Length: 385
Image (tube, rainbow, N blue to C red):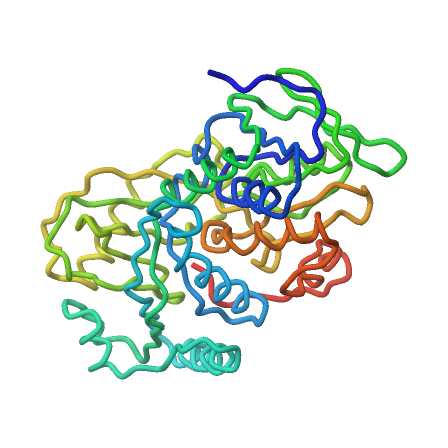
């Protein structure tokens, strides 16, 4: 039964992926009443439900390290807080470097991570093979590892937030598309949707790959583009073939084994394809299959069950925008996560809710406002696939 329609709210959140659901839950948790979430489809139907759902604290910038660690700490206790299993599995991330310059960057990353309380470490090839016994990476020049990294189920996690938010009074309007943002005298006044208008003093753009289009409705230009990334999953195989997440930046891959035994794998595309139809290609399937078998020879002959694609909402420095618009008071943005919206969702939702309700945040995020792009103050993240 659809939620009763009301044309007023205190906060309207656009998008019911991990960002929108986490923001809504955290707003309600902080005591905010009359929160509405708009979703043009259903919760998790967008990028969240199409992601590989990795979670990690191994990053190359202080900001992302802080976000990654804080998110891990939330996820480790989230099933108790929300009362639902989120499918958390912490088998660690094993980073694989094939170039000396890349290994030097990974070592710098580890030093930064350690200074921030992240217990990542450089490991030898022998240790890497102990962590992933079926690995074949004789051409690699170095490895780093963090045992608390891993993955969670994107559907279970998001629906847990959705359920907990609903229980705290948040209204979710499914199959309701935002078609306009009402702005007057530099202040947001509400939204226009396919079901009607809602007056609200606060609107949050958590629309994932469509965030730049939503922002444009408010007269704000976000320098984002949304890039199609492909992914595949195999039939289940004996668990332990790939107990950690394998990731390489020069190798351009991520590979992990889900608890049910299936292998999920993906890579960054060439040419930055912006394809909202979310098409699939034979080239990706062939390329990714070769990469998997080279790294994990034991998987030779395993069958691919299906492949699909999702969108990375890319920012110029591969770090998100989290904060209030400078031009339009009351218009907040949580977007541009560059493929890492799921893993940052628990902490970014908490921080944005804090900002809206209290005006301050438990982790300083001033550097994540979008005016950094105009100022040329980019904070380039080197650790992205």
